[in-house]
Length: 509
Image 1 (tube, helix red, strand yellow):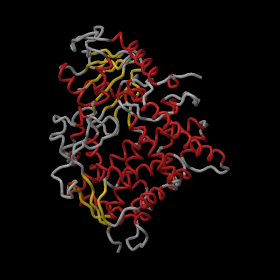
Image 2 (cartoon, rainbow, N blue to C red):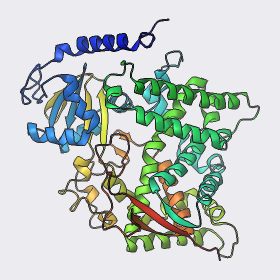
Image 3 (cartoon, one colour):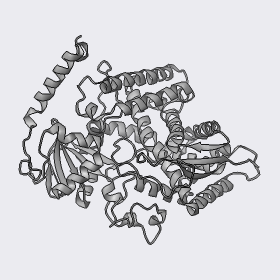
Image 4 (cartoon, rainbow, N blue to C red):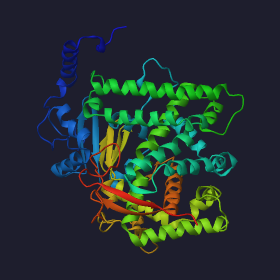
């Protein structure tokens, strides 16, 4: 079977360029006037060659959006990403519609405009049932239901989560300096694999490490060219296919092992197989679940620890709250390791008895979640903030529009968990003012698990180590770096101002 990749590279490049010209010629300089409405829809449209106009969106998204909001002077503008229309928006009315309109689909929005999530559909020789996003969300909701988390099925894995965390922290030296975005992300990844797959995979350390490396490779392959021109035979495109195929094969083997098992477990793979999923669709589900934890929760726990470490008063409060939790629910005279004592604390206590930690987590999300929310209009034409969004349009809303709005959050770049105290409650001063866990029709289905992972890691670290934040020279920094909101994949810190955690393991009494 012939394909573009079978041609010599000069011929492939010429063919690719020809296809590119044909696919974009009809959009070439349709208008040089950025204020010109599209088809009378009263939405300014960026003119020019669509490929060049859209490139900055995939390279420096935040700068692209806010410069064009300023240039157009409007709350919405449109641009083309080759054959697709994208509507960028900000403001209260646009935000309310974006998060509440029924026809807007989240997975379809991220499929084109995000592009880093591995999917079995990238492999042309793998057949999967076309489950709808709503069906998959229902499975995820059932998997993380209150009843399932509260009963013995989840409690059985709870000690393993803390054992995994303790094992990885035990691999550190007794004192040293670490990059929280690397070391803590590795812990989150291990916990997510534990929760999202099966015991056999979670305890195969080589397989877990390989999965992490493959996801890292996929992230690097998500270049602007790969996202805008997915059919072009670039090295990034080949890398995405190669790494996705290896990920698929790795997880597939463990799913088949569980399918052949004579005794069912409470693990996620067995849960999905029991609901009638094919092996291919179990793999697809697990890829999505683990990837979500990989790009989000791992960064969040790192930022949480940095912000706590930079605020001595809050650091003391967090430490006292974790110690109170331990004292309330475990025997103070126990000689058991801390991770085993923490594992005996009921789930409900983790969720309801840590208000200081909860406030810090909420403020950290507000500070760092300024990235883009994406949707696609799969319904009919709709009116949003007095403007018409066509069926098939993609939509982009920058979360920084609300999270860093000084009219809602005074001094928006100051970390201040007291914002949520009774009497202030700044997150309730405007509609959908806090979107760290989604909002409206699209709440984060994995919120409870993500919060739990962060709390488990913070608890074991704070109770086991003395620590402080240091810069590259080992000194206390004047401030933490800001999040690079142009990084469309993860909330990483801006380059050039690194911060680390200097730690010393506490002696066990």
